[in-house]
Image (cartoon, rainbow, N blue to C red):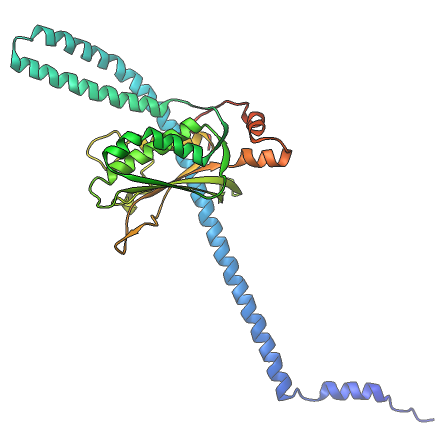
Length: 332
């Protein structure tokens, strides 16, 4: 008995052996091209993201390295300042006694006055160095960016009025955090006074204090919540080559001054576990970008803890640092 042909199998073999039609081939190539394009776009996006993350991590590590360097420099500066203060006091005392002895000789009196003025200036420099090197005691309490700005503006009220500088505050949201409001206000005040001095030759004199919440990457590679306080003026701005150095101690672009004002600001923010930065100004006057913008980023850790544990912000601060934290400059 002859075998009957398997019709189904024959049909499949015939279909497989038949050539692909032009329409089918075009559809295949279109699908392949789309898949390739999607893969290329995904690769480009991932590459861009990796580069951005590497840049952010490098920046965070640089901030950590700078904090440690400042701590070591602070210890050395404190030792030198203490050694200078003792002979400096002897110079000032002897100059005062000498001034009484030469009171009847105008030329000699003038020379002694120069010695006393130089000694006074050196004493102020030593005082700034010791202030920078001193351990920062942070007494953290529940506060807000608005409260910090109010304290700073009140502290600078005299110089703002004297120099005819307008100031405005822009706070985005509550911006609540646990911090030493007096210390942080001191840091903001230092920046406001610097801005006033920088705008002495400007036609428009205005300072903007702004606050917002943001997630920033820290040295451990993790994004954390921060309250970012920014101080922006309408002065000539900060040269690009100086931006990375402005928070370094003894660096200044002025003819006078110790260059410790911004270093002390960095020390205060660092003691809170925060970060300092100089970023591009957003102000434009007559079509030109003007001014400098400095940012102080303070961690929102206490606020997150309060939300997670269902306690008040004050209780979260007390649980975290016991109401008082003794933090050195390398606490970042």
